[in-house]
Every structure is written in structure tokens, then in C-alpha cells.
Amino acid sequence: MTGLTRREMLAAGAATAAMTMGGTAMARAAASGLDTIAKTRGMRFGSAVAFGAPGADRGSFANPAYAAILERDCGLLVPENELKWQWTRHTQDYDFRQFDAIVDYASAKGFRTRGHTLFWAPQKWFPEWLVKHDFGPQPAKAAETMLADHVRTVCKRYGAKIYSYDVVNEAVEPSTGALRDTVVTRAFGSGEAMLDLMFHTARAEAPHAELVYNDYMSWERGTEDETHIAGVLKLLEGFRKRGTPVDTLGIQSHIRLLKDKPVAEIVKESEGPWRHFLDAAVAMGYKLVITEFDVNDKKAPTDIAARDIMVADYAKAYLDVMFSYPQLKDVLAWGMVDKYSWLTGFDPRADKTMTRGCPYDAEFKAKPLHAAIGAAFAGAPAR
Ligand code: 9MR
Image 1 (cartoon, rainbow, N blue to C red):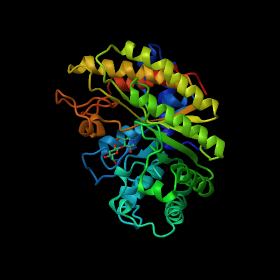
Image 2: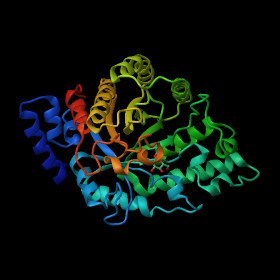
Image 3: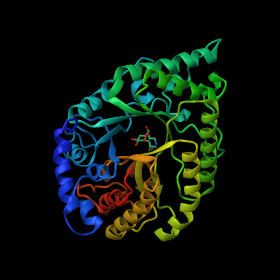
Image 4: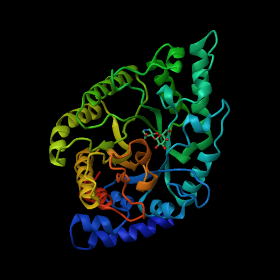
């Protein structure tokens, strides 16, 4: 039993029981934690987690009801916000207090932790001081020093405690497919130079870690998604041509029920072009990771039962396509409980009811989406 935490041993027992009992894949899936089911296929499951004061009503490890779900379903954790520059560099100095608390919890409980993110590329997510920063007479050198220092500082501090980094998040502008133009890329002289520096520095400082380029291009058909996908592919090709050390394409997977169409129709129009994209990425040698999975239920019905089924069906269809790629091993949800999801505030429903894009409802009860994720894992080819 070496290398297994107590939580994993308990979960493994539950999984064995679940796998030997009869019934449908759905019933098996609902009977045990998601990471446990994923492991039977050589895969892993986890979630975003937030910092919080003890007992706070948040998606935090310090909220016992939320922690119980993490400890039941997850083997992987990722900070929802606490490693972003807005948290760690709210001034030009470093402040790791909130992320340290997450890493301490993860280490104590035997979770593996992802680092999101060493750099979030759109300027609107920079801390204010960075937007106004004067890079001086040699801007490329100054920008390089600043970003390399950031990567080194984070990688040194956490060492082997972080197994995978979103080294750069969202560098491609979806409306044009070009790299985003910001005060930082302008100082560097080009977006490519900025990206290359980030990945080379991360490889040197954290040679053990998986290095991920993460973005939100999604499989739903729409002009922006297509331009976005083309831009990401071009970026991935460029990395390979220049020898930039990028291991994995992070696919955020905020999938969206935004059309007044049955699930089967949305899936039918999405799958072909999406596979084309994934095929191209894996042909270049990239691995895949689902980094931020949830379902935007904007156009799903108000009725809870009908909506939950639609969300679950849509998720299952998407995950089945993704899980058919052996290059995909890790799957992380962007939160486990509806009431703490970014979707509730960021993209509220017209009928003002709570969004239902996470595996658990506001009462911490598992929903059909939870069973659908479990069933997708249970049915995935082993890797
Ligand atoms: O879920 C996050 C939310 O709490 C924050 O307010 C927001 C801005 O920091 O970021 C959200 O997470 C985003 C992630 O970091 C990158 N991909 C999109 C996610 C949802 O907006």
C-alpha cells in the first residue's frame, strides 16, 4: 500500500465495491468518488478550490461541507484565484499567504496540486501597478527580468508540491486568433518572445513539472471559437518550430448550452471540427488536460429536473469525445458546488434561478452531472 494516502485507501475500497456491483455504469459511477472511478482508467479527477476563513460559505478547503466533497471526489486541486498575479503580486512584492494555505491543506490531505497560473495574458487581469509599470530604456530586458523572476520565485517556493503549471493562460485573442497585445508583450517586442521566456524559465526551474498552455477555445460552433481555435493551433505549431518546451494543451472546457437546440444537435455540429482540432494538437505531440470543466446552462430550461438532465447529457457527450483521446489523463472541474461557481455571478440566467453547471447543488447533494462525469470515466478506454 506504499504511496497511498489514507483517503486514497478508503476510496480504493469504495471503488472496488462499486466496480463489482451490478447495475448500469451510471449507478456504479454514483456509488463512489469521481477520482476513484477515474483511477480505474488510469485517469484522475480534481477541482478548483478557494482560500477562505474557517467556516466561510465559499468553495474553500476551510468550509467543512466543501472540503468533504473535495476529499470524497478529488485527487487533484487547483487554486481558483490565489496563484494569479492579482493575488500574489497585488503590489510589486510577492504575497503567497493565501496560496500557501491551499498548498498546506493539499499536502496534509495528500492531493496533487496544479499551479494556475504563472501568467494570465489578457491585460484586464493584470494588477494595476503592472499596467502602469515603466519598463525603462531597455524594456525587453526589464520585462524578461520581471517575468523570469516571477517564474523562478514561484517554482522554487513550491518545488515538487506543484506537479503541473498553467505557465501561460489565454494568450490568444479569440476575435482575431493573434496573440494578445499588452503592456508586457509590447515591452518584450513580441508575444512569442514573452511566451517562450515563460516556458523556458519554467522548464529550467521546475524540470519535474508538466508545462501547460491553457486557453478557453470551446467546441461549440461560433465564429469566435473557430478563429480562437485556429489561433491556438498556430501558436502550438510555433512552439514546436521554435523548440519551446510546452508539454500539454490545457482545454478549460467551460462548455456552454447557449443555443435553443436539442443536445444531440449541438453535439452533432460540434464533434467533427473539434476532433479535427484535437487530432492536430496530439499529432504535434501535445498531451491534453481538462483544466476548468463546468457547464453554462443559460439556454437550458428553468425546470430543475429537465435542466439537470440536459446539463448531464451534454457533459457526458463532451467528456466521451475528450476521453477517447489517450493523451488526456487529468480532468479538473472549476468548482464542485453550484452556489460557489463563478457562473452564478459572471453569467446569470435570464430567469434569475441559480446556474446548475457543477456536480453538486446548493445543498451539497450530488446531481445528475456528478453521475454523468462518473459514467464517462467508467466508460473511458483505459490508459
Ligand atoms: O473563477 C474565477 C473567478 O472567481 C475570478 O473572479 C475570475 C477573475 O480572476 O477568474 C475566474 O477563473 C477563470 C480562470 O482563472 C481562467 N479561465 C476562466 C475562469 C472563469 O472566468
